[in-house]
Image (tube, rainbow, N blue to C red; front, side):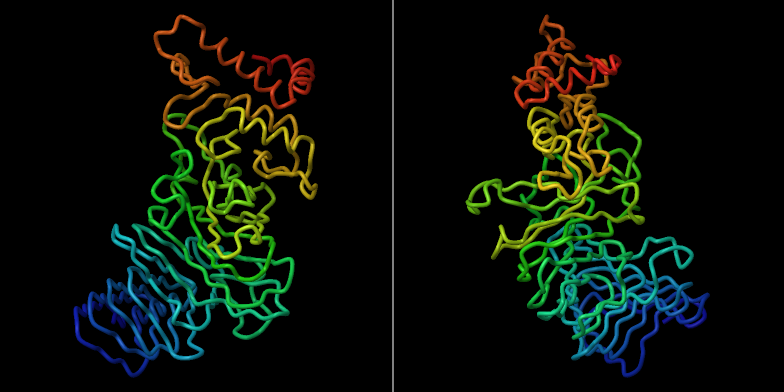
Length: 439
């Protein structure tokens, strides 16, 4: 479809068999589209964007018999697979993605299931000058993208999800994840058993805690992994740096300049690791630092505490100072900073949630971040604004008709909180050296 010009085919039912290679957008000036809305497409090889532009759309149908599915075969081509349905292949079948594969549920929880293929490849790096670095894996509108399980053995501690991984081999060909929403895992001990993963749209009902995101935030990406049989690991994700939550303000109430360094990698964990039936919440396990490669965040997570449960990871942009990720900057966030005070990355008590500027140290800079955002509340107020009469205070939201000075209320709650978490002396030392920081 689309050899030198434009070609479009729509299949709404029945079975279509293709014996050779199906090309969508064969030559550089060509555009080919195949829309599968019903029935079955049986093909040994499909190439979406061979040298031109290709689009394969699937809505509730299935594709079978594949030995190879390639999305964007040439660095100058453009390829996209979008929709929901099932795509399966023969033993050893290869999924080569250097373009965009998008699970689009159309507003309903639906899967784009590619787990019936055998192995993932990404032959073309997702970096300039090969392209605009906008290629990868995506899930939108209730979609969930399921990739082939990663084959592992007892000798392997390093695996990739969404990047090249040799089938049945301990090696990987890509040590730096660059496809958007791909994940690299370095386990503390050898990994035994397949790693099954999925990428979920932020509005998918499986995203914990259901339809209520922490503090009213919106996730940029969410991953779901089954328990792969290893206790702890370093993890690196390639987040979507083209997402509007990265390129625009995270909260219209308090507009701010977009800052990718504020992005955080979170894991869904129980509040009490000894009580898995109790409350769970999102915990920051890593932040985007100035020295990391484009679009990457690293973090450290513990699989042991959730044995038998799905592991959920996500990326979002918390408001500065919101270490607890609950949409409020208050004493809970100050306590996180206090517990990690004067630690550096690698220390036992170091906590990336308290390291707001991601410089590898928790110090006065991070304390100032909390101070500058003190009593900010998602969707209610902005501390820097003049409308402080609606500020959320330590004891609750002050009525607009109150005759008390809201500035003094905020100041008093700040000093009370400092005293409560044991950072009052540190703050007094700081403002003695820098009087301009004092309320």
